[in-house]
Image (cartoon, rainbow, N blue to C red; front, side, top):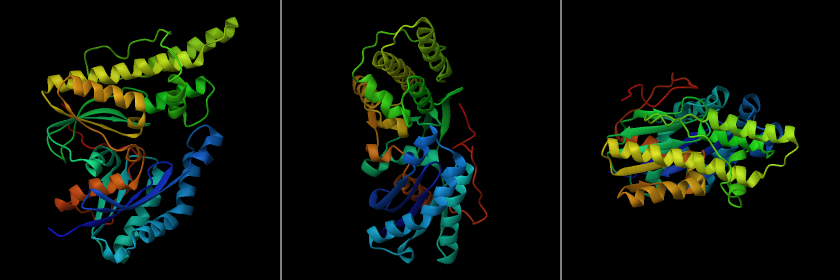
Length: 338
């Protein structure tokens, strides 16, 4: 089979990214334009601001990517783009840019679910093996997904309220740290001790998660201490919080692996770049004879390379889309659940 080059575009939240990906594995060139410094002023992502910045940057990012790859749109075998889920205005910018390129240059068009991109990002530096259970942890998702093959997704567990990344950001704000909160909590936790009691996270025997309780617990802990004029030890709260979160992720993942008798496990999503969570899950796998797949940290956060990796799977299956496809802010990988 001849080499397949895909121009992939990602704009689901606050990163404008484009990538040229060869055969779903080789990152020929990638550009990521982040909006973090802008949204930091507001304490979080402002959807209207995000979409406006995508509009300003999308053409520049695509042009720079092709220049780095020393290639042209004419050299591409397909154009791929994230169409769901994400911020609707942000998704539309990337989607319309991709559809325009596909129409003008008469290229096959591939719509990609953002979460499929996160999961298949492990194919960039490895090759996923099946059956597989994937833990997807990000600012908007905390899911356990069973996969029989590279295009089969069955939800076996999910968050019932806050996503783990969202919980990190909210706890960071409670502790007086700026956006994005996740890396700041992780950094603070490294110098702390787990001296604060934290509630167990949905210890009900299911594979679902719930993080609203621990978020409220931290909020009440800090508020009550302030009311009494007692100083809290922020690094110890951060350490206790992170350990509790990680224990839940590890324990539920291990339970799922045992129940479905699966020996392959992948970690995906932006929170997978958290070193403590990453190492804890890897240690769990190593202790239980499970093969673990995890992307390089630069492919954990939002990027177009992972969209190209997922698009290659769809390309091989001739799963192309017409240009009437629209953005969808909530669409999941599959409605099938077990």
